[in-house]
Amino acid sequence: MEEKNKDIEQEEIMPSFVYRDGMLADKEYVAWLADVKVRYRQSQIKASVRVNTTMLEFYWSIGRDLVRMRAEQKWGTGVVKQFALDMRQAFPNEKGFSYSNVKDMKRWYLFYYERIIKGQQVVGLLENEKGHQVGDEMKPEEKSQQTAGLLEMPSLFGKVPWTHHVYIVSKSESLDEALFYIKRITDEGWSRSRLEDKMTDRLYQTQGKAITNFDATLPAPQSQLAKELLKNKYNLSFISAEDVEEEKDLEEALAKNVTQFLLELGRGFAYLGRQQELRIDDESAFFPDLLFYHIPQRRYVIVELKAVKFMPEFAGKLNFYVTAADKLLRGKDDNPSVGLLICKTAKKTIVEWSLQDIQKPLGVATYQLQEVVERTIAEIESRKNNEEAQDGK
Image (tube, rainbow, N blue to C red):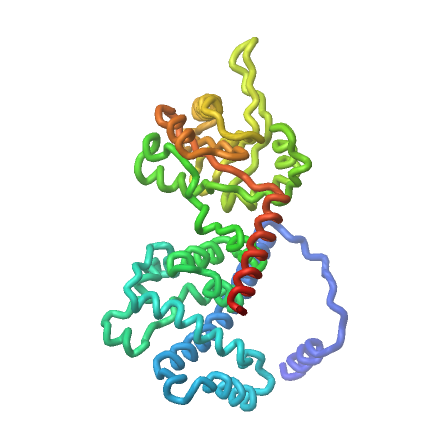
């Protein structure tokens, strides 16, 4: 018996190449292997989130300490710089204790602390993994805790990278705006460059701001959800103004760049096609410009494009297309279809009057092409330079 065990032990430690040994993988093995791969990827994500959360909780605590102790009043304006130098000396191999990074820790915490202390209402934009509102999670129970600076970091913040947090608090004008971008990052996995693009495009200010008749044509919960699908202006800077002289040019350019257009439309849109023939009878055929389906809201979205200013008759045609989508495409589990008209320009009063008696839910927005966007950026930079020159005087 002892000799047999010895043989087994020797067999286990003998060097050998590992190769496939003729095993036949059945459906059960393939399913199990696929499940293990998914679990492994999930474990990697969870491990990454845990590491990020731990680091952010530490950064938050440093910012909270500096605010709570009124460090600069107590030890002078150079305390942050001294603290950074002392920490770098103690931990020379760590990269998180630069002077600028420690300043960002304080600014990050202070951004939320000041706005909650001043009583700014936290909108219900975020929920943590337990389903609790982050606004409640951030809000201390007693004012005495607020003055002591005992504001805890919301657990959901741990899912957002540090550089994203720094950029958000440096560019956001309000608490609601910051939480809006936190939600989009956690929902859609935005990279830093995508976050910068969306904040530059002022997504918070434009999302849900298109002129619509949704309040009159959809029930209350549905109307608010549908509004969130649309912007009042779409950044089509991936298209050159030189290439767009007529409506068909704009349509063709969007079809060629449908990936970029889907990103600009937002999360959840699926592209179904362009100029799909709508046959009414032997003599009548129509061709809607672009057809999408919004998966989370389970509704068809018909997009009509106009390379000219808005005209009232455009609403009538789009109303006809939305009616057709409801009658021919909409399934029993689908919500009402909506129409989006994207024009070169649109005057609010004309749009509102045009939509007033329309029976189907429609929205009207405008667009910016490449040259317009570049000129706007140049104008902003020029204005900033002039302001700095005036300040210098």
